[in-house]
Length: 316
Image (cartoon, rainbow, N blue to C red):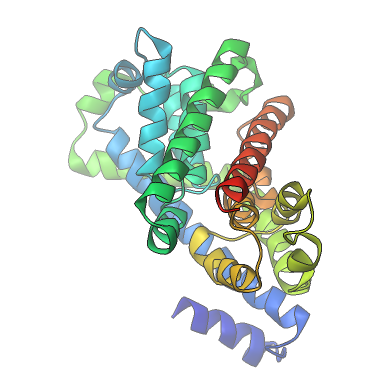
């Protein structure tokens, strides 16, 4: 129904042609604006409701292990079972930080959540079997753990935006809440976060819509084919400005594979779109200062390129 509404507005009310660049861009913008805000509101509300049963000290106790790498492992594994892209992982990230969980541990989650994508996992399992899917999981989790450990060692807490640390609620207060109060607390959290990120979301979706409508369909196949040694980094560069979730990118992935593009290159493109897209980085900028965001992007870029080359090598 949401897609039907977007089609009606773009093609009936605005009178745009379905096969035109501007029509595709506007339709994408309307659909994804509504979808993303509904998704963010729902996720933030549910995360906040769950957090009301896990006060800061309890959360910190679970993930702040004496041996820090244990916390990184737990956070990375948690990322596998949370189907979030970078932007929708923001409320969880904020919850971890304000609970006192070490920054490196929170980044293990932030890296793992979009990178070890459940749709990519199912696709790999169905097409190539459990062995390849297992390699994908192990690679993604390893990157998340190592990336989190590196960020933790660099002591970059001062590069998180100050307002994140100012969102506080005591353990006693949370444990004493009634169900009505928990719902009110969760809804208040929704409005507070959306007020801070709504403009970034709109800008991100607008960029994604323009790229969706105007990016040439055969550009990636033409310049990032099997014969190009630099196909993987090029695929990542092309994927970054685009915007889609994993479900939305699957049709493109199928087309690219049918046209003979190498598996690792396709996977790198998919991971760049879902875990490292420019729109999502714009949203994350509201939480992370530029230097820390740059470090995060650097780690993800190197990791995705490595995974792409590794899978190309496996499928030679």
